[in-house]
Length: 113
Length: 113
Image (tube, rainbow over all chains, first blue to last red):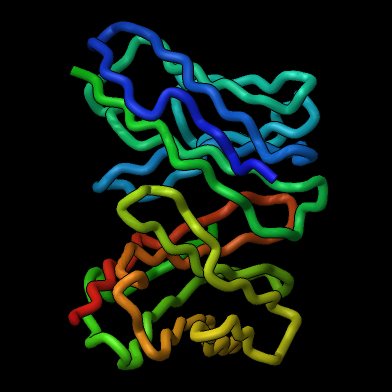
């Protein structure tokens, strides 16, 4: 079974631009969560999608948004990029059941200059 | 809100020796799940071990075992017969039903040959 796939692996953007990151979950998994990882703040939850609906949202500004498609693939978008958005963005997928561990992708390293 | 604390930012262990990584958490829930994830330089988070709070027996996975003390809200990870490939960041994580992961700040483990 293929793992969680995130694209692209690396991105460099300029302040003020917007960016879209993609995550393809493990086949059959319907839950996709996004996390931001920075040296200062550690791993922070962004949002979770299940069956194309946002189920939970972390404490991030409205510039951060996401969506999930009918094939469970998910995208997250960050508009009006700031230097502080530079981070590793990790996607995790889970089966339908809630009480299972999450399987992570290798992340997208976003650098804002 | 739930919090997870890892008081050891860095640890080192000699190859073939045993090391214990500490984790404490704070929650008012009675039902929850605890995890240890490993993040090697490849950046992908890999599940090491999981523990359901309702189980009194400590989880074990080959060389990895936990010491789960529910009353003390403590969840330490013991790595026996340490190998060079065990070198990584280790994250303790908490999750309750319907919620997403809360991660600790991580412990960087070095394995010395």
